[in-house]
Length: 378
Image 1 (cartoon, rainbow, N blue to C red):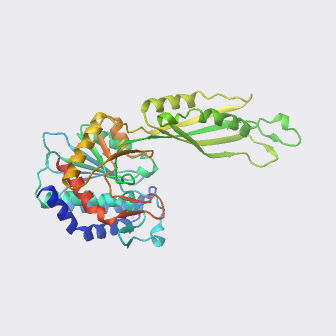
Image 2: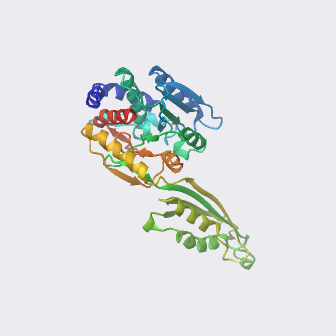
Image 3: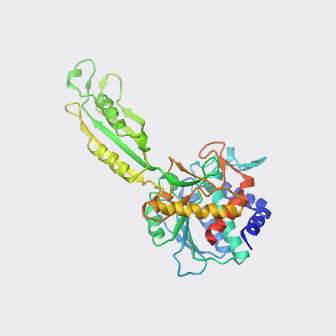
């Protein structure tokens, strides 16, 4: 079976893919709901075992368990790695108001696009390889994690240790709006700046107070000056809190800041800038916490080479692939940062990630499944 035959095979399975997707979407999996995450993990383990994959459940006491799958005999060549997550941003009960549904050429439902359709692609790729007896040049490892949407706090070390020694990593996260693959992603940071002042009665003895909110207002311009948009480095002060009532000089104020960077050097520069913040108002104290929790996925020559291989496979399927960048992070940031060539955005085209209109384009599923199969075979 050549790649065009694989694609034709995938076309015959479109309705089965949708049935599988419907089942996965109906099994809600909020990032902090261990009961539901573990239920879905057990279901996925069973599904992949039936396809011939060996499955290792990685216990996780403070969150959902993770799954490490291996498929195909071990070869002399380094293994291939596919990364996906099965948690979603949607809270328990969302499915009651937003059930899986098909409207025309689109399939809607919480988690369809990000990224349960990708779990279907992975299953279909392994099925095609098994049914077509297609020769794998290397072992395929698939790591399915349960906490990507909250920053991968329990899976990062697992991702990095699993990726070491792999030839490359494929990440079937949603593509860019035009179906482009992702060869770079911004790194993501989260910082908090807290100000300690001194409370006092605002009417009787305001001179005895030290206003923490005023100090925070002085600090915000300093923080924003750390941005360098020309290099893709941006900061957003997204949450400010402080004070108790209007007649009390506020003793405490805080700000939460989102940071996005395109290079590790920019990440280090901004981090140093936060550490160098000092009080302006006498008597106040600053406490800075946080850091870069996802390093940037930088577009390296090895990543470009991997993309060009994908472009070649795509052309065999009548698909002209392009590349692009995004400001959001994924688990591919971790593999790229430790030097593993990583290609992201291999999921099913659609739109509405994390939004009520989340959906995939049904007609794109078979070709994307064939593309993923072709990359694993290459």
